[in-house]
Length: 217
Image 1 (spheres, rainbow, N blue to C red):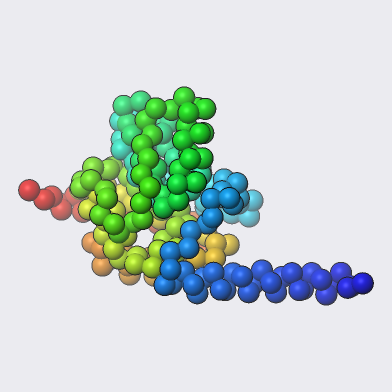
Image 2 (cartoon, rainbow, N blue to C red):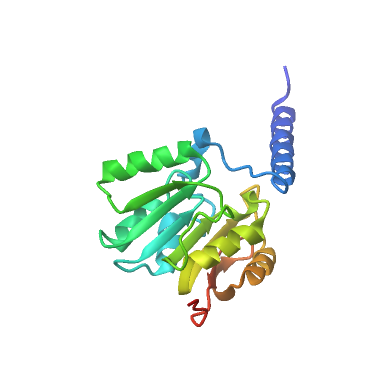
């Protein structure tokens, strides 16, 4: 029989190995959380407040009639509270590369009686978003899953109205964790400017703003 400490260390080593392989592989391939693990994404992390849905929504200061892009929405942990916050005159686009995730969002939105949620199966950087349409956008532990981060952020930038805000949330527990410095480097190339920072170094929400004077004819 394998001693308990040895078994624990073996399992821990396996988790670390999977974490490392997943992180390295995501640099060249888009590797989102599988839809069958969507239930895990729906859980608020008990070790940090930074990625809790209520916290992120509160920072966004959503108002009725706003239009919100939930990029990499997963099973809709942010989609539904955002839709409730902007009301029936507002709109939330649930965007995800996996139809399985979007199916979960549809089911939950219908059960909640929300009719202001739209759906789009696409990857960021594919130029599928309308220009200057959204007031807010959110990327919650998603950016590290995208190989071409500049293209993804540029598409969000173009889709935001002048003065619009993108909220990027990262927590160290995610295998694709992105540091504040790396996010800012990519965001700067896309045209964003830092607006606000909430949280700490290893668990935070970073607000990036499209300049209000960036108006295209």
